[in-house]
Length: 468
Image (cartoon, rainbow, N blue to C red; front, side, top):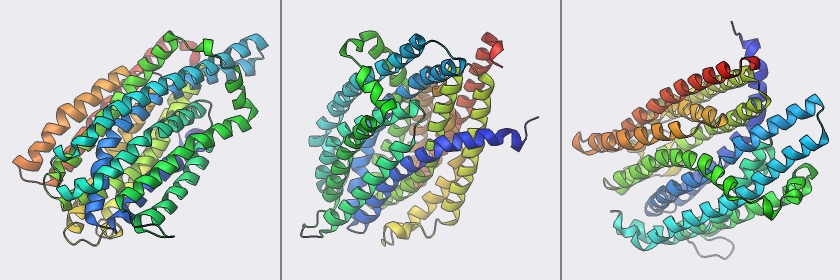
């Protein structure tokens, strides 16, 4: 029988890793929120333009970010083995071999990230001349095009930052990414104030100003990470022992095999939300602006779950590397408990604050009542959203990525999109119909991911009974 005191050490360890990640993710979402608030008060058309551009951009961005997330469980498992070897007092040769493995993941991961950058640009850049083919209002497209071009350019430095972040998370450090993210995000918000509204001698630029602020801040992020890695000897070691001969086709293909399913799983969810922006944009720009407001609030609460999920992947991979399956089980359960607590807080804020939150973004009387309704529905699916995030993170920690990918594709694209279209237009529910479809789309993987993890853990326990 497990009690609170039994779980307490796991809560503390998970939160120690999760808290900086939560702040990092929350900070990233906060910049998007600040963009929306500041652009929204500039004009509704600019707010819709930012919403529409980010919907297309983040579909590819989420796939790319998911793909580089595959480095964390790989590095984490080797790091867990290294900690076990150090505790057992093994030979220097064996320890050096583990360090070489981690350095190999670093240099092969950089090659893989470069390939992901090229793929992302190859998908996003050709969309620039065809933005007016998505059925949006001409005024929205006029504002959207310059903003879209700038955020597409920002994908290269941002993915380099994401890879560096995931690499250090594999080593168990989440603090550096938090400091860099918070600092660059504050810079982003300050540049927003200058460039969107036209302060300090600049002309008001609206959405385009937000795009320039994002590009500048994201360019600084990987530069700061390189400085941090060079400053700490334990991390600088991996830069110094990494060699070009370590780059092998087999290692890059291994990263592709782990990263691609994670990316596709993330893409499936992002594609659903991107499609929802396009579909709701067919209703009206007011409905699209309201949808963006509710989505921004859901993003904020989801960042907390995502932080716990990242910590779960780290803790599970480390304990798996040490061969301690009981610790894997306890760490994953502790993450579920923490996530449910965060979901309850997020749901309460959205449901009880639904009549007040829209005023933070806009004064448009046609947008506010729609946003209020969508915030209520968004509060209802907090639990499903959080639990599917934690379930996916637990599976990533044991490098089980292919089946979750199939579940995500089936749920988010095969079920949710047709259902959302039917509820929105056939049953005349408007934007509410799409949001009701979200609840079902998130609940299916929330259940199936957890069933899958427990089955995989039983299999590992059967194969390695000494690890209990």
